Length: 346
Image 1 (tube, rainbow, N blue to C red):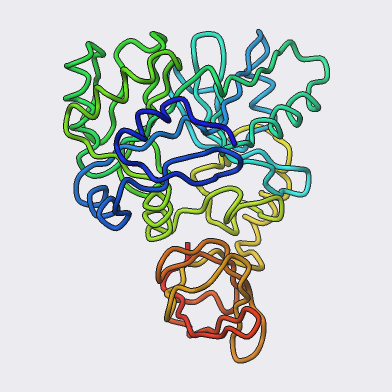
Image 2: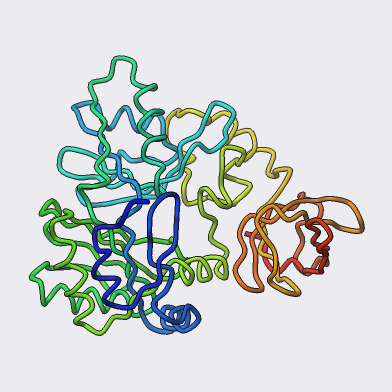
């Protein structure tokens, strides 16, 4: 199992570790429920350095990526970012990612251990374009700051480390992008939040400087509970190669005005029809003893399955005609049966 670069720092804070795609990551620092509440009410800090990072560079990098990604990267300025997806020709998701424009490259941030898959796909798509593609996961650190006070926290932090910021607490940007640090306004948890991308050598310095401001760390368990409560899907859990973006309402990942990209015809056709066969929904459970893959039934008819669970809430796909708020459903896994209710359509 691979250790994250700041493993010793997390141990010193009393972190409990667990496995995520071959990485040993902090699950919590004593109380996941308290960490959840702190992020929702104030601000919390999480080490995401184990997320995959792929660098695309070369003089035709923009043209190459824009012909593949669902969102439009051409208007991006240096230091800016956007959320996007990579599809196959049937419109199914091969990956999602945050794309960041640097001085002479793009950095693509993907789920842990997804960088190898992305590297292979991108290299297969190169025909004659002048581009190079590298795995830079081990070269770059990533720290997330989430919660209603995350913007003000970054402003306070920037004055301490001499990294001037512009904008307001809801939309911050670096005044001097390209210095090795990038700030990404992130929707990973469905609340105000930012990701800091930086050279790995600055990991300890960056983490400690944020802790000195009194920001509390949180782990994977509260990360999952917060995003599931907010109804935010995650690739490898709720999104997969069987997912069409509109099934999970990923409107922020798609540009409907850019030129052609792989899978665009399917996206355009589904958008024109205005409906898909299934929808991602949030489900309130009568109790929380369920696993991903648990079948969803409506009046003895199988209509879907769960994809992510945390406590008494879950995400799962339900056939369109049953994906209606307040619909009562049944959950079955082996001999285990319980009730649930559709609480939100994502």
